[in-house]
Image (cartoon, rainbow, N blue to C red; front, side):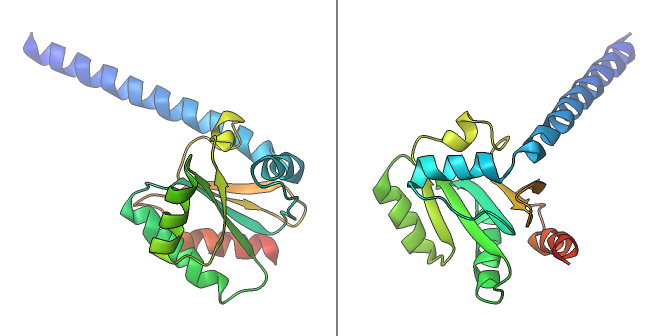
Length: 166
């Protein structure tokens, strides 16, 4: 009888994981529907500036992200010094200006960074969570969205972007 309970628990766990995965996958497509217009409005709200968001990678994170996230940010930071065809911006969700500044100074990033002090990017559901990277193509459409984590590969993301650009 115990084996039945164990198998039943495993089956329930498998079903639960499948449902979570399915729901997050089906929800992920809505983030690709946002355009330069929605993102431009958002940038206006957090910075007071209207930015040209074409051929752009946005790196959205909180100031207290994990080391793999910081490593990927370093990769993007080194890339921007090598390319002039791609715009890269960091959006850092951070309530305090001092923490934002210390974060940038400590890591010595050269990527253009904007502070989202109220977490509007999450509130307006422009991204599902953080940390995340997304690509806005030359038409202003979001074409790719991926998490930044220990398993992410910025070179692979960049290769995919390169195929879209060309």
